[in-house]
Image 1: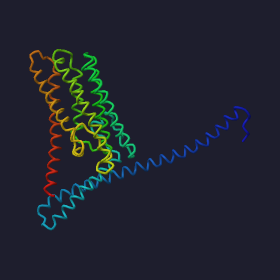
Image 2 (image 1 turned 45 degrees about the vertical axis):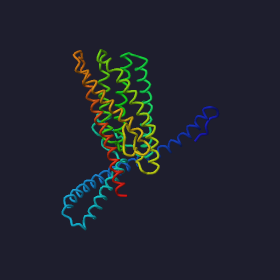
Image 3 (image 1 turned 45 degrees about the horizontal axis):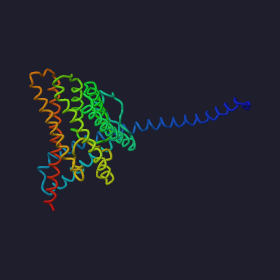
Image 4 (image 1 turned 180 degrees about the vertical axis):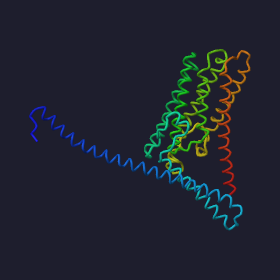
Length: 343
């Protein structure tokens, strides 16, 4: 090999030789990465098929146990109960395992994203995505408070109202997508709180198409005041729930992928019961909105289909939120009374 010529060209050639050596190292690292990736894919497939097979066998075992349990002698009932508990515990372990395995997207994610894999492989990545989701909710909640306040007290324009409703549509659509991804990654989000956002998306979309007129102006201030109050309560919930979840995760009493929600759950009982009056007031305000809209729909001057179509989502939101919160409160009281009787 000839020595490099002096001057800038020689420096360039020496740099190229160093880059060549580094490139060979990169090629070898990439080759190993591809081999490991193929091994990982095979392990994922083997683990998924093994879990699916054992879950099916567990279901069959649980069904057989349920059928034969009534005819068992009294001394065998304890063993049958222990076996049932072990089956339930095994199903919970499989849930945690599947959080780290690729899953087939549900109908909603398939329609929105296609068949792309949204399962995150590491705890750090899952928690970072969950944390980003929480921050997204917090920032948008603050923005919604400011915009609803501006529309309610400073501006009276259908254009700014439409921009606010468009933001609500985008916000709730984004929440439904992110929540579906979080569910695929192990978050235990209750079904109602996901469906609640679908209903809110539909409601915001109908409000967006509602043309300006007498009926719209009659309901406008009430809706904007409700939106402002709802965003304020959601801000309170996030602030206190996030602190409560942090403490419970540190104690090992809650899953690391648990989220703040727009309602009340049993784990919020200690320290967060002061939120209940705010929540129930918001629930009944939803009912008041529904009744107001149904009353406006009976007005002879009402020509817009949006009036009635907004009333039904508000009624559905009231029923779902109210009875979900009421059920949690009832279960907690029943559990406390049952515990005090045992003592």
